[in-house]
Image (cartoon, rainbow, N blue to C red; front, top):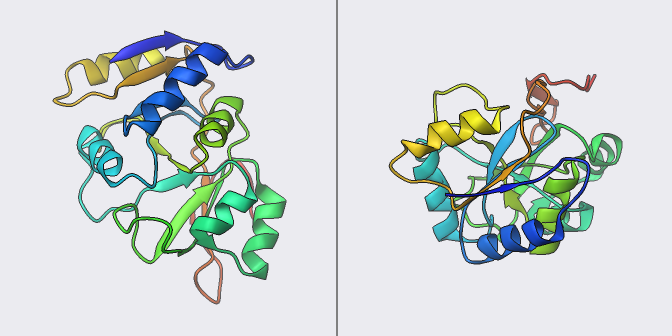
Length: 202
């Protein structure tokens, strides 16, 4: 696993270009978000999706979530009715994942009928998906069952002994400890809050 040292406040073009190139080739990148370090891959690439599941040792059938660059991208991969559009307008960008019906533009290997997606407020996550031109997987950069990773050092240590490693890590040091994103399921008549986060939805 290659490691590039970056800062949260300033995007390094060289590191961004290398990370996007790896994503384009079906690779997996550890990147910082506003909640924790995440594992990312091209959400439209089935081989990349399978790779990220193997790295994370994620059980088959468990859905993954996405980060999108903007609302236009979100609409391509998920169905947004008036209520969903209203939630996106109110809470994006930010740590709120909205679950909507998946469109056929997204492989079923990512999720079933529904897909969770959000627009990150952190520059690195925004730039990665914007320059890739596609949504990226956003799943916490820890193997299934392990604790959330806020420290790049801990992430390196955890994946050094993993049977399969990510291709690149964007090391931004230790991130502020925050709750994970809120998860709001909009696929039912009554809105369901599946997980509370730092932002109060209701």
